[in-house]
Image (cartoon, one colour):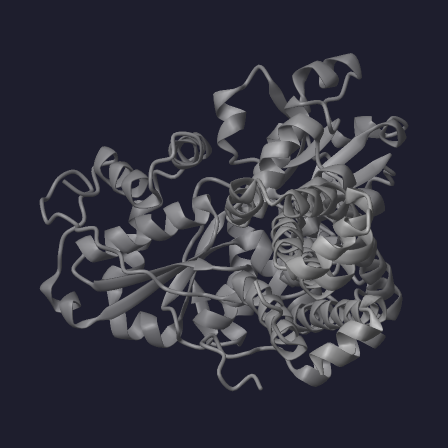
Length: 240
Length: 327
C-alpha cells in the first residue's frame, strides 16, 4: 500500500502507528512525559468531529436554503455555480490567517473557515439537484394547487435527495480532512499528531493520518446510510 | 454534478489524509542557481579548481532563517569551487537529521540546543549555556553516530517569552520569574509543538512552576499578530525574530533567568565521509562565512526575507557581498 510513496523512505512503521494509538509513547522533546495513547486520540478525535459537525451545520444553514431556493426559481445559476466554484479555490490557511487579525484564533475562526470550505459543494449540488428534477411531477403538483414551498419540500427535494446529499457528503469530507490544520489556529484536532512530528515522532504522524482517514470514512458511511434512509422508496425502485 | 461512488469518495479521503501528512513530512529538493565570484578581497573566498569534482547537497529546515543559512553555506561553497545543489525545505529537525545520516544531503545548519535536546535526549537544563561548551557536547554525541559538526555561529537562536512593552511595564515584567503569581491571569500563545516541549511550555510549567490562563497553539506566522491585536498577553517568540529589531519599542522579551530555553548557536552538521571527500576547504569556507553572523546581522537578514519579502537566495548573496566574502 505504501510502496508508491516517493522519497524520503517512510520512517514510520504501521505497527508503531497502531501502538501509538493505543499506548502512550515516549518522546525526545517532552522531558520524559509520554505522548499519544488512546486517551489523547479520543480527545483529539472528538474535537475534530465536533469541529467538523459544527462547520458542516453552518455551511448547511447558509448554502442549503439558498441553493434550494435558487434551484426552485431556476435563476441565479451564476451565483450558485460560479460563486460555488470560485469558493473552492480559497486557500484555507490563508483564510485562517486573514481572519486571525479580525476575530482571533480559536474555535470561531476555524469553524467559519471550514464552513466557507463546505458551502460551495452544498450550494452547487442543491441548485443542480433541484434544477434537474423532472418537470412533469412539478407541473402536476402545481396543477393540483400545491403551494410553491410545498412543491419544493414535498416534490422537488425528495426527488433531488441523491444529488443534494452528494454535495453534503463532499463538503463533509473536505471539512473533516481540512480540520487537520486546526492546531495551527488554536483548536487541537488529530492534526496535532501530524503537524508536530518533533513531539509525536514518525509513528505519531502516520497514526494521525490513519485516524483522520478512518474518521472521514466513518462520516462518509454514516451519511451514505442517512441518504438511503432519506431517499423515498419509489425512487429506489426506479433507480434499481 | 452526478454522484460519485462511495469507493471514490473514500479513496479521496484517504488520499487527502496522506497528502496532508506528506506535506508536512516531505523533503523535496530545489536547485540553487546562484553563482559565486572568484574575485579576491579581504577574507574573500578563493575558488579552488580541485573542488570541482566534489558534489555537495546543502540542506536546511523549511523556515526563513534556516533557508537563509542554507543559502549562505551553499553559495559560499559554490564560490569555493564545489558543485553545489541545495535542499532547503526539509520539514523538521528529525527529517533533516535522517537525511544527513542517510546521505541524501551532505550537511545542514542545526541549532546546538535542538541537536542536544531533540536528537540526544539531553534535558534543557543540562545544555551548557556557553556556545563552545554546547558545541563540544553536541560534537561528542554526533561523533558516536558517524556525524560531525563544525564550530558554532556567533548568534544564538532560542525560544523566548515575548509580550507588548505596555504589558511588561504595567505588570513590571523583566524576567520570566516575574510572571510568578500573575501567569494565571495571562494567556499564552505559541507554536503547536510548544505545548508539550520541555524547552517551551512544558518547561515553563515544570521549572518556573507557572500555570497560564490558557495556552493557544498558533501557526508561527501569527505569533506577533496575536500580541498586537491583544488576543494573547504573552507569545512564544524567537530571539532572532526580525520584529524584535524592527519594532524595539513595541515588543519585549522576558529574560529566561532559569535557562529553560537553551541558547541555540548554529552548528553545521555533516558526515565524516563527506568531510574526507570534500577536503579542507569545506570546513574552512563554512567557518569563515559564519563569522559575520551576529544576532543583529541575523535579525537583519531575517527581516529582509520575512518582512521585506526578499528571497533567501538574494539575502544570502547580499550578505556574502557586503561582508566581503564574494565580489
